[in-house]
Image (cartoon, rainbow, N blue to C red; front, side, top):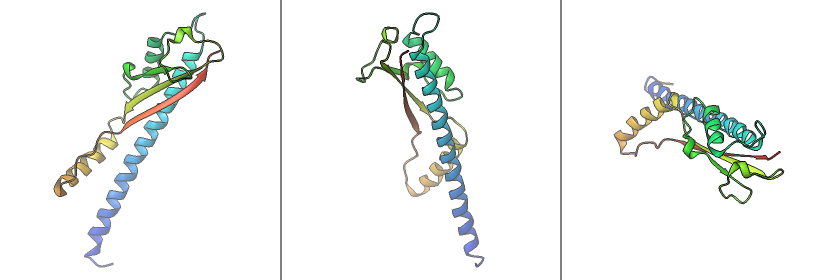
Length: 143
């Protein structure tokens, strides 16, 4: 390898490393959001103190379980088997309850990576990267 190729190889290796690190953060955030969705679905299907939790309680629990990801409770949807929004306290035993969550990738390394790529892309006229939005759904059966 000549002295001329060394900076090019270093730049390619740096871009590959940054891309892998950003992708790893997205994958970890998706896994965490999936766990929060499953937790919220189990909570929605459970009987707490002799009653089913309300939709607002399910949304609050989903938002709390997703921390440090920011999940707006208004973005949490609870649907029945037909995909129609449902009123959780009316769920019948044996029926499925599906909880869907939406979150944007947490600030951190991905934000730094996207800032670097946005800066490099602006030099060649590439549009900035959009924030990555994660959507996850989980289903549990009412007890």
